Amino acid sequence: MTQPSEQKPELTKRKCVPCEGGTPPLTADEIAAYQKQLVTPWEVSDDLRKISKEFKSKDFTKALELINKVGEIAEQQGHHPDIYLHNYNKVRIDLWTHAVGGLSENDFIMAAKIDQLV
Image (cartoon, rainbow, N blue to C red; front, top):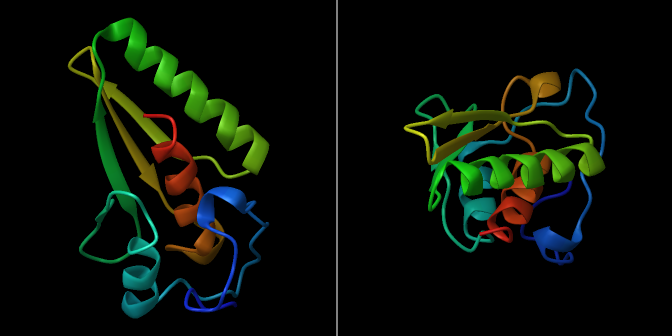
């Protein structure tokens, strides 16, 4: 696996790549390095398996628009987040890589792309 400190295009210009079973999830140090590459940090779960962020929209319609835009990116990238709509205008997004049982570089690529939407 490539280390985040290596010179690469910014996360928003990268594409998610399929992960295979047996690939280890990111370590705490790798997660911290990727977090630094995001415009705004995403919350890391206590067990280091997921990153999450909540977005507040103007209204229900705007929240649905965000969900649909995230869905389009997810389909393009082949990396699908868990998306929750609550309180009519709040959208929470959870990212993690099922194949590795935790976080991978793909999660941070998706986070960066999602951040570009807002």
